[in-house]
Structure formats: C-alpha cells, structure tokens
Length: 250
Image (cartoon, rainbow, N blue to C red):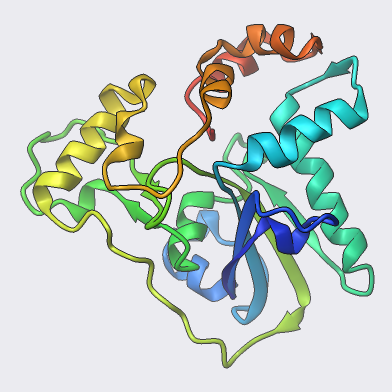
C-alpha cells in the first residue's frame, strides 16, 4: 500500500522538511501498464517520500555542511540517499527496499513513477491530459504534473520505501485532493508546466502555504553544472546527465 509522512518522521532530528504517504503496491500497479509494475504482492506496504519547501534549509544545507563533500554526482540526490539510509537504520528490524526518483532500469525506464505513486497514495493529485475534458492541444503531448493541496507545485517526490515483509490488506485507499478542479485551470496548469516551467508560475496554480526560499530558487534555476560552484563542490555529472536534471524533480 502507498502512503505519505512528513520528513520529520524519517529524520533523526525530527525536522519537518519532508513528508511521506503510505499505501499498497496493488494501487500503483493498477494505474499502470504491466511493463511498469513493481513485482511485489498487492498488499505490500510502501511509503512515497515528498520533500517540502523547507527541505533545502533543514535537510540539504546541513547535509552539505556536515559531510563536507569535495566531489559528488548530484548534491540533492546524494542528500536524499543519505536521509533514506537513516530511515533504514531507524527501522533496522525491517527489510526496506529503496527506489529513488532518479534511478533507471537498464532499458532506461524509471524504476518507479513517483508522480503515479504520489497520486495513488493520496499525497498529491497527478494532473494529466486525460483530466481535461476539452483537449485544446490535439495530438500534441503535454506532460502531467502533481499538485499538492498545501504546497501547490512547491515540492518534489524523491522516491519510495518498500516494506516487502509487511502486508496491509485492510488499508483503505484515500484519493488525493483535487485542488485544480476546473478544466480551465487544468489547461492553464499543464500549459504553464510544459511551456513555461522555468518561470515557476505553474507551482502557484493554487494558493499555497509555503514556497521555496529565494536561495533555493536560485539554486534550482542555476544550470546543473554551475550548481556545484554555488556549493564549492566539484561535479562528477556527465554532460548528458546535467542536461536531464534541468527540467527534473525539484
């Protein structure tokens, strides 16, 4: 089953920089083609991990300062890997399998579709072309995007934690909050996300409680190859991967 929880539940210090939501593998698999299915029983417990706007200040910056890394592949990814490892240590009596949002299979498909995971867990609504009744784009492909009822687009999905030995057959699925409920606003959202994602405006498609800080916005607005300079780090990311991170999970 899939679900969500605040990052404070997962961190040793109890900081509220991230959230989780739990649920079942069956919910996820039912929403996708077989080629994307996760090979676990339908009732397997899963948590999808979201980073909230405070993640940058409360998790990322302390991680960079404490680790004093000189060379990393991607600072945010390394940070997420670190905090996921803390979760595994805190639940050392449980078998936990991790799938990060940036991990790919040998065929270049993502290991897990985190937007679908967030939707079926009830954490954030995944708006897609199929959610628009009057399609104004014809055959043009418009990519979907998740919107959180509190943070709008000012959050990111970082991966899932799977508990293969924990079965929750009685867990009730909760639908995500449909906070962009009209065709007009959904069209506006998808067009802002697909055509003008760099101006941040799709993230404010609804009124939000919290946004990224200006420092965080500057970091993510900087080209991946240049972000390391802001942190005083040396990049190990290839040119191809740098480009792929430009319009990714942030």
